[in-house]
Image 1 (cartoon, one colour):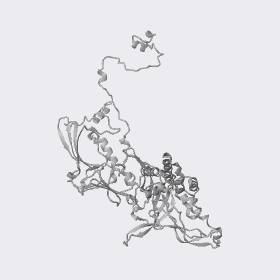
Image 2: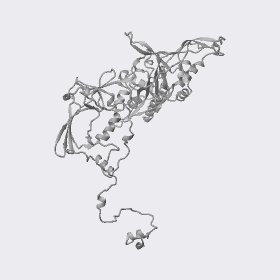
Image 3: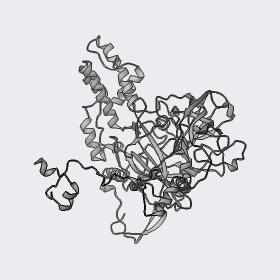
Image 4: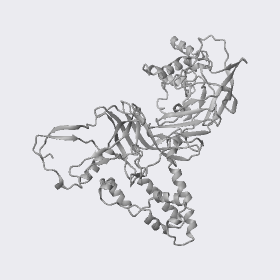
Length: 606
């Protein structure tokens, strides 16, 4: 058997095909036909143009008498953020225990809409957590007492409770939790006022007072760590009259400190490019810390770049031939020029910096293999006029700013579905601005279609009208209409004069009347349902008017979205907060609002 499958002369066995039944191998390896390797080492090719291209890729056509970079030394001055300011509030020390997006974007979660309770999902979540704390400490006997005092109850079916009874889903939810669940938010407010929980109910045993009071701290901590929101209204960076955020960062407490201003932040992606830099300090006063470090530079690499090895072909991950830049896309042209012309001239020097640092590179010492040292400074010098300076990664156009700002922002932020979606459009026909509520939060905390919600509410009010109060149909061919109506999810903003100005105009939130034929209570003002447009309405008992700067609503319109954000910070802590962002709208629109019309009558019309 071994003699049959191990031939002495392999060439004869192959030529005569002595073993045609061999159909599988457990190992394949090359066996040279000759003992001479001269021809294989010559690397012969039949395409001379291909060889010329490889020579060009390897830089063999350049006759520079220069050495290769061996190592480099860097000198850098750094400082760190110390203070922050939200909108027009007082300056406070900054902490790196929370992401910068959370610190700036956080908004107060609305728990009431007028006198009605909303965000029932959060209220139930807090109530369930309090119930679990009672059960864990053996105090579940007090659950009935807390339920009796902090409960949900279905309100009476009248016109003041239209938000509940006009919608079947809302009514069913209220009926399901009524008398069964604790309103955790109401309990939270009472605990914050009294500072304890034992005084809120009658104690079955005086020894339980200490045990109940010990549950206050974990209960408050649970809400504060689960949902981040400002403790006071002044702690918010959101400017309702501008529909954007405003914040400032400061590097230290000196007078000539580095300042970073985010005057118009609304994109929802907070990083260094959202800030403008301003300072009065000189280069020598930049920082307290100076960094000296030594590195071995490496060539900059990108996917699809020319390979240096002879027999290794490039992949097609970066195809410069498929890049089709427009006349305004300068960045794509720069990418092409970098990849095709200067890619092998750039080196990468790694340097780690802490988050929230401001760094400025004084210079870089580069050593080549010949022992020569070169001191390299930034190509942009302060002595040059500002018109000659241009850069991509700068916080301002000033020539004095050559600093790198490492923003303490989160790497990845998850977004929930849109809780509110408002379209602000200009209506030149009626000479006003409309705030169209597309998506609003329901009482149980879920987003719903605002148009359908408003239609159901109107039909609910129509059900209270007695048919006998309707007017008798008239027989005239035409009738006079003083004003028509618009959907109740369209909120008007009318132009008014700014205080003490005769020409400057701003937009004030107004209300359309709900006019129902035969309604005994008369016209009622329709109020917005979204928290973005209800600014100042829920400040009971003295609601405030809401004004909006006219220039914030362009002819293209403005879209405002509000949703929950979630991220995980450096220590693993999860942060959830409510944030808003502003986008470009879809142009102008018409509401169809008209006054003093003569219209043709229809059969049976009143």
